[in-house]
Length: 331
Image (cartoon, rainbow, N blue to C red):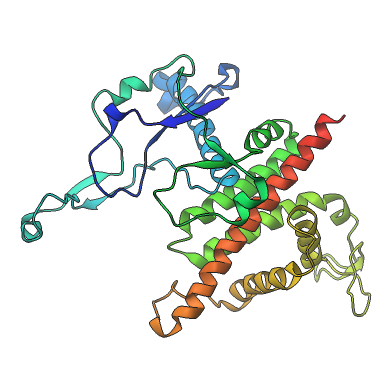
């Protein structure tokens, strides 16, 4: 389907402390999936745009899946423009005052590299395979903040991709949404923690909706205006009245695809409570509005919660996928 390999040394650019590391991602597309574009202004280049659209759609899909299936953040520059000052450790500090900003885009470029992209098959390489780690340990003890760590994967990562292509159209719709929410959350987690938190929670809720789709269809309303529930497969644990059961479904889903440890209930309750505070009360995570060094401990605890819910969204997603793949292969 695809392969990722290190960037060949001849295409490396010299810099001592980068935090973005280029890799090559090669993949193939099915030309039968190219969709025609019926726009008059693109008539002369419609074939090119149609194929490029399919290429980019698959590229972005693979990048999002790799991010959701691993402990790493894969990305493609979006050609964002802006003013920049070059970072050059060889320039004396006092000389930086003499440097003027330049207008540019985020883009990795070196002469001859574009020619390397022109392929008609996956390149034969003699490299060691990416290190595979024990599945649960891999997601439970990630080394998130070490930017110099080599790429690693779960021992079941290949099985995840195989199971992904077994999903039917309806399952794929929910799954793609959940993956995109994880990807979006990881994309903004260092700048917009509250939104990232909601994105990871929403990913779990999306898969919860799929898991309990049939039960949700059993919910009937007395009134479509005020949404009063007449009957439901979910009921209040105190009074027995029918309810939407969203928080119950959330917990049941994680109990099935994350952990059955009773100790996890309090953690999940706390995380879901944080979600409610953000959504309903506007209580943002610390650091979103401003930095308060007097609350550094609380800020660190909230960041740990953000990483936890990110990993929970990934683990439950891939465990659902692996279980679904096993079920489909057994039929």
